[in-house]
Image (cartoon, rainbow, N blue to C red):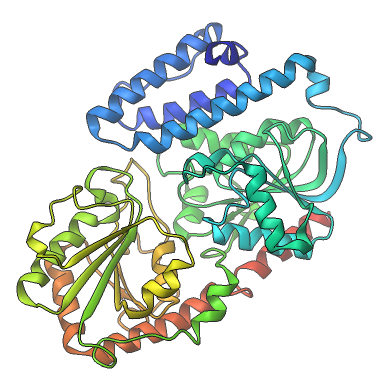
Length: 481
């Protein structure tokens, strides 16, 4: 089926080829480029790229599982579209020009994961738009369900969402990347890869769009392929605004002359789930030195490469080993896709616990007695140009539950937090982190103060007024044009 699908070198071919090329060229020399010759036999070319990438993934111990599951889902989605096209073979039938055929809305939100509960921040943002704009609709493909290992169908997840939000029933619909039968005054998307995937349809239907350019989601720095992809989006006649959430992203777009400044909207951070923000002030916390005698330190992240070096897991284990050798009342906790085999932990003498991937509500109980979250993440290690936002989502969720945040800031992204008052900026060095933790170990009142003040600052920075409201105002302005 793959060979039959990619024999038609259109959007499907470009999406697959660009995604594989981006991953492949991070490690491959000389770099591969798409030329006109590849379009003559696209099926062989894509199979060649897939094989090359798989070989590199295995040899370099990269993270092939996520990329390949996404790839398989893309192919599956395209296969479904090919079956539809057999019944509707003509171009005009795939993208109807008649407005009478399309369902017309004001705001069309396009996504690949909504309304899956694992992405609570995304659901929060989209729900705010659905409530605020009566004539708005979410079209979702469910493409990234495979990444979160969801076994339920997209329709089942939508049904559960509508059961929890009956007032939004009928406001989410299943779609493919061609968004058939829908049209809108404006579309909104998250991430570069989503925008690229829907771009052809948006242009064919002449729907203006705004998107948020978060770190990740195909966006990395100083990669020619990615810069070309960004340029492709920014030169689109339907492009209106890009929201950037990190000062580094804003500066990068201007420095590279990728986008004109009047089309860039800087809104630092991201949308957080309202229930977490509401709970934060009254969160019942058990603090070290006040309510208990043990210091509990946690690390929360997904593993994307060997030893989790990009997230600083190797540094975390070194810190744990040094502290365990000196103190018998410090425990360590790891949540995410890491396990005891990623890095040997026999020196920790039973002082470390692994929890695996957990549902978001689980953290309400988990963080009750956790004192510190350590995040020694480092940029440009997972891949050339790859970086995390500041602070990471895991740190924000922990901090809102009054857990003191100890995190790196190698790219100097911090704008709102005061070091050693509501957050602690740490170096990417185990011994220096140990020194900082020992100081907090001996000053429980300072540790508690950082946790409590951090929760207040996070609620302010990531609250409705600074995150959701500016986005709504932007969309209102674009809809009014």
